[in-house]
Length: 84
Image (cartoon, rainbow, N blue to C red):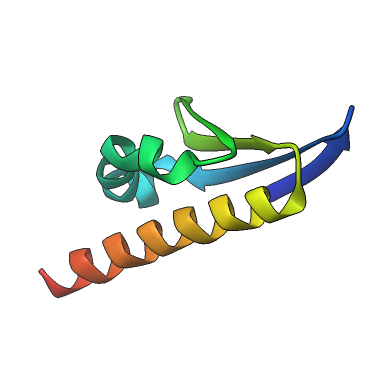
């Protein structure tokens, strides 16, 4: 699940992941979150049932790059977990 919003010249995206299904993926992603951010701001919040990744940037190119990086990291983690 995701949401996209635009306010005050900033673009934001929220990605929501089911905790039970993606806990290993998020644990693999946490140490690298600073490498992904670049021109965007990325924060991860954890609730009882979900992980939410908040991405904020001033332009669509930065949002797209952050989304692409996060997606790539999660897909790589998924492949590793399936192989191992």
